[in-house]
Length: 270
Image 1 (tube, rainbow, N blue to C red):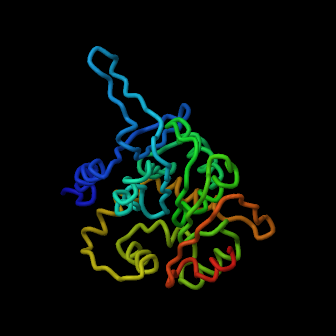
Image 2: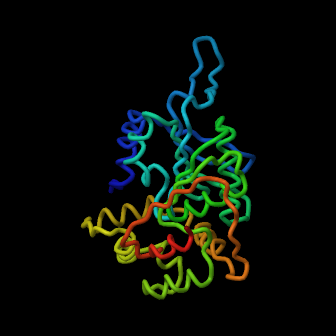
Image 3: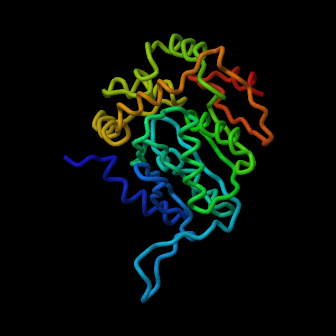
């Protein structure tokens, strides 16, 4: 039986190309490949008589990097924003490692590790400076990027995310939502589990048939072992939590009814 979510991918690819971005894979080092959606104008195909090697040009407009959350890969998360941004910006949408076909054989699973490889990938794409937009898990990766690479990250927009997932924040959120572990919430393995995740992740309750939920589980929740390790690598001890001094301008964009990260956390961060 055809997977309805997978079947939509060619249509998505076409629409995103019309919006100005196309998929491109970057081998950061042997064993580590990160997939990106990059500005179409930066990907140059060889001319007649040239070797069949596609090469990249540097972006010509200010760069915006859109970093996805934990429940979907990059372009699925940001599909409705890309078209509006490509008119004025060179838009890059990465799939973080273990999402959307991005893979590594390295054992590290921390947000720092994600940030380091994301920056390496962007540099290979010719990006020297950027504004980073991070949602949920992607916001924590974006904070690490800004902290470690202040000369690259000029400014940030962070939505529904925090500096770091501490013991106390994790326990409070899970207890309030009625889940025993982060994996139970963010790595559902059944239609019931996916519906539970969507019920707390979305303010407006949308109805989809169970068939579509099953297909989404198959396509969007691959690399389950590695993603469970990413969740384990996310939580740090309260005593290890520090507040960096960020030179960048940071805009916090929050859902007023956010059930996972209450808006009080945004006010505390501010």
